[in-house]
Length: 259
Image (cartoon, rainbow, N blue to C red; front, side):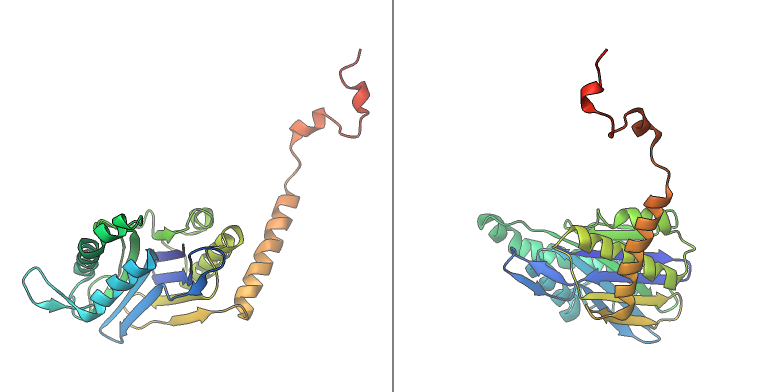
């Protein structure tokens, strides 16, 4: 399992993904889930993956090595001319791997499973973010819901729901994304450090941030500690519910209900 998120905002794009993969408590490994393909000044493409690791690695390999386009020419992640066609290209790669491997996986008791976030900007075309499903189809984020998640997203989603909107500044969005990631890590051992993060300002065609966050990262550890402290302070500042005042636990239990 993994957790990756993409946030498409007025000022640009934020992508964050963890690196943990496991096949049981005694078989834990680290693999990069957030891939960034960058030609400064020409294109920046970020692709985050979740699901069967063998499937997603095969998809990424096809994107790099190339697949025939509908008109016959070989396309790669570096030659597709628009982000909409990039989402279609990723869908074709998913189809290719599924056609080759899905039956064998089913025979072996496995399941063909993958989902991908595909985002970025090519030339003077607009910045876009898509979620591609295991069927190869996809949807695009909008200003109303400017983020998408894949993998183990349920623990981190409330943070984004409460805090992210289309006008959220990029630095603040990255901070919120890291809080969302930490909340997921605390509730699910299948998500863990290191975490990869990137920021792509709109129309710059060059990443402003492209980092790996490890266990000794000072800022991330500060975010974890301060978020925990802030949550404790917040719930303590809220008045106790009035319903509990009907029963005082300090009363003698023998006297309750007697008359």
